[in-house]
Image 1: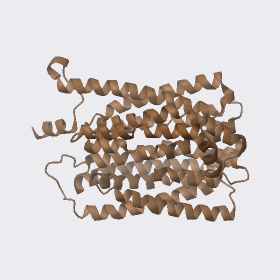
Image 2: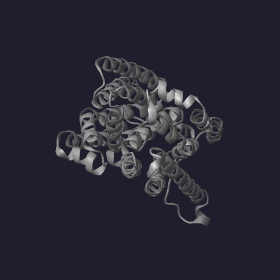
Image 3: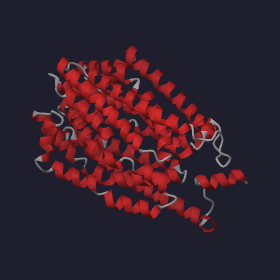
Image 4: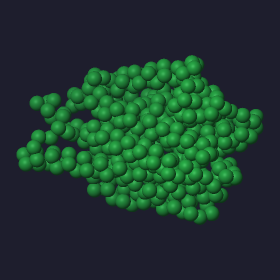
Amino acid sequence: MLINLSHVIINSTLARAENQTIVLAGYALTMSLLGMTERPSILLRQTSSALVRDRVSFRAVRTVGMAVFGATLIFGALVAYTPFGYGVFSAVFGADPEVAGQAVAAWKALMFLSALSGLRCLFQGVIIYRMRTKWMTIGMIFRLAGMYALSLYFIQAGIASALQGSIIFVFGMLIEATVSGLEFRRIRRTMPERDPDHEIVRPRQVLPFYRPLLLSSFVVIWVTPVLNTMLGQTWQATLSIASFAVATSLMNLLLGFFTYFHQIALQFGNTAPAQVRRFILTLGFVPGLVLALISFTAAGPWMLANLLGVQGELLDASLHALRGFLPYVLLFPWLDSLNGFVMGQGDTKLMFASQTANTVTTLLVIILLVFALPQWHGVLGSLAQSVGVAAELSLLYFLFMRSRRLRLNPVVSGPSFTKSASDRSKNLET
């Protein structure tokens, strides 16, 4: 939940600009592009948590991570310092020249965030497996304190560009990565050089787990850019993009506590699945109830006005977009938990299929909605994402249950091509 406060701090800071709609729209476009470059780095958290058991396996995962970081930095430099970047934001995202200029300026700082985020996730995967998760909270507290202090300085100096929001974000990520790295160094001292019961010793052994997640990311990363591009075709394009960005930041804040259910299922799903299910049943409905309370009572306009500094028609459009996220928030905890069970069994290729279904469904729905209801602004994006997550959950549940039946009854059902991590380990030993 603290993680998503970062976006609240940044959006509320940029909302104080004189031309708040243009600045917020420019920053929203850079965040859309960041979703494309950061997602492969974020996947290192799950990969590290699932595969790192000794120093040798950590070096194997780290090698894969360094290749990812290098690729994202090269791409980031092309966007920031060549005409390619302006073309991406103006031609691909459909932004007008002023918004595209804001986006390019903001990207010159934001291009470094993917590598910093990846380092943080690489360390945090080990921290989570070693049950030292309090250090993730400590790191976030330091991160938010630094971001808030810098935002106050920018507010006093005057908000003029989306670049200031990017600088705040990168500064906070640097702080969190540093804290995570320091805790990892402590853990590393207790890690054996080589665990004889663990088979991961080379980078290529990491790829069967990481590759399906990476392929999924290449599919999913197009969702937000295409959503913003399609919202740019509505009657008031800048208002649609900005209201969708504001609603997304507030929705992510509410959903923040529930975005690590996959880590709980990954960590305990094989040893205590019944307890994991009870935990999810206890908390899974909470974000939907809270979002409904905010969306349909006076609490919503108050939070948007006082927490994010949103006013006028942007406030009304943002509140409308927030209501469209209600199905998304109701379904997400169950989807995130199921992803954890899937990763715990090593069946990450199932996630590639389900996330592809999400992407295709979301894009088809946003296209239909924009042509049918172009006057609805940012809510079109939230409705499309809600339908997409419903499609993803439905397909993943079907594939997971089918895979489970094949593993439990291979003689009747035929040979299983999706083996758990423990099955693969036994085969390697044989």
